[in-house]
Amino acid sequence: MTAYLQMLRAHFEQQANPTQALPMRKYMRNQFEFLGIKGPIQKALVKQFIAEHGLPAADHLEGIVRELWCWPEREYQYVALALLEKQQKQLTPDTIPLLQHLITTKSWWDTVDSIASHNVGQLLKQYPSCREVAIAPWRRAENLWLRRATLLFQLSYKAETDRALLFSLVEQNSDSKEFFIQKAIGWALREYSKVEPGAVQVFVAETPLAALSRREALKWLKAKGKLEPI
Image 1 (tube, rainbow, N blue to C red):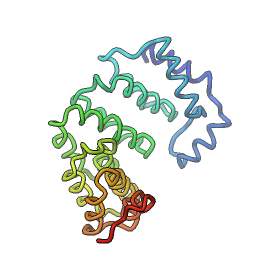
Image 2: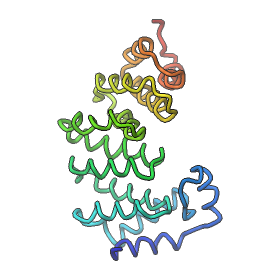
Image 3: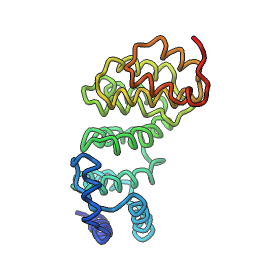
Image 4: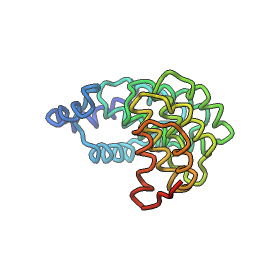
């Protein structure tokens, strides 16, 4: 373990709260251990640590992120994502294998959704020519979290969303029985409906979707009274 990681661990362990760790573990279906540090305190600790010790050197970032990902307490995976986020603009397509590792290891919505919509999404917006090559193996993967990532990486793209790609990914996953895939389809379409309400409504009407996906896709349009007769 590097001196940087040793200091980081000591910094966080000082704030461990075993009493709070129990409900946090239960909330995550007992899949992960927790130090018991709530989100706002985690963010404050990261901010303080970086102020005192700086960010990892670019050539050390991947190793530190991978090491943090191995530690049992879930807070350290959140720290890893915070460090990546701080250096997002320095990431290149060479980071894709690391992001794939993070998506497919210790996988759950709390980390996967952040990686997909922030790290992958921002990276592929910065390098659009790499977009289809990067997600091609993910969209065919048996791993549901990789497929969820392909559905969610354009969440913040708004008018820059590749409509054809989004609709193609939805169609490819439309018969999935996985809750997290059905939910992702609805979420992705709902966000895009804020930009292209008519296109989404027509697509939903013409595409066989699970009831959950359909309901989630049209939720914003319905709430805003923007549903049109088709």
